[in-house]
Length: 169
Image (cartoon, rainbow, N blue to C red):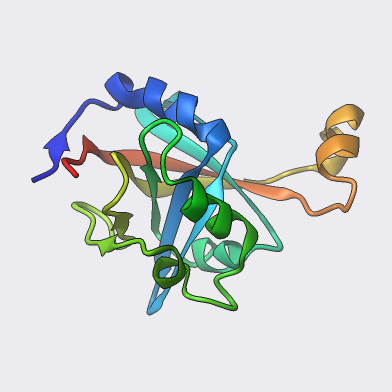
């Protein structure tokens, strides 16, 4: 049985694991995908706990999240699930079922339509509040040159954290 937690209590685990990867999962209609994210933020915006994630236009997940109402972020224990994170970060859900390929279990979320990943330790269930396309002309040149030389920019998604809990795996 998942244990309900305060999002601030596990923001450190999220931020420490994020550079190593976490799973962003989105369900839109019958379509389902997960991808590895390595950038994001957690905080308090509009008097709500918010998780911010970034998805490039080129990603299959972008097609889904643009039509979805929510998303989940499933965070493995620090340094865990390296191989599934690598596959989910380098392969496209257009071409394969990442859950099957990575031996990840889809689990029903508590408060949103998008599922969570059972093998992960920390779960954030988020309702989409706002999205913002990056404005390349307002981006620092050093960031553009290092991360966007191919002009494959991100859309930034803000999700209100509706449920946050640690799973007992």
